[in-house]
Image (cartoon, rainbow, N blue to C red; front, top):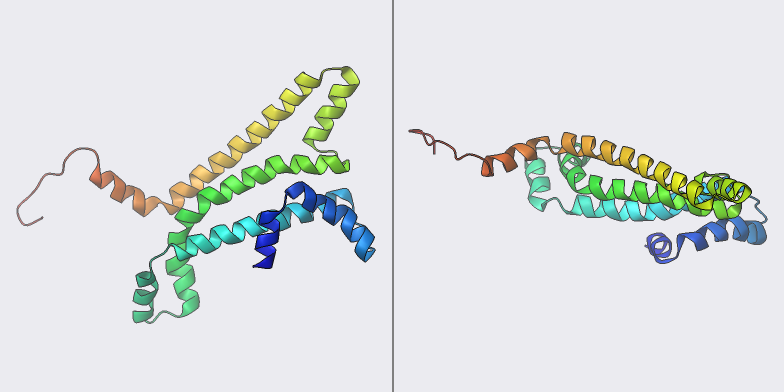
Length: 183
């Protein structure tokens, strides 16, 4: 609870500085800028992903677990075969949103001097006095990477939504013909 509350409740930039500068000063542990950035991003987004997964699992009706228990399934099998496949439909959209946000937030690590996309665009823009062109190029590259994540998300959503897509289409579209004996 403390971990999730702290990392969701404090700014990512502050967390990056605390890990980069604070660990060196307080624990005499010197981490590189890239390592500090990776740790900070992992801890920050891990807190958000923990909450997304918790909410996704809790969104599955208790009756699903009860029915699986009545069939004699053990708790690990219930989780892997019943709960998680259904929860994935709820978990995937916000998880990919977090991955896209993390991709963009990785630019904050450039404040530590890491040579990443934003840092390079500022450096090249400064040397050639072409700030706007370089920053727009960086924005375009971030956007392209985000689109790739969105396409991956779409494929995974389709995979986990297979059975549900069929049910949605039954309620829409052309009316069903009634036949004798089939109501």
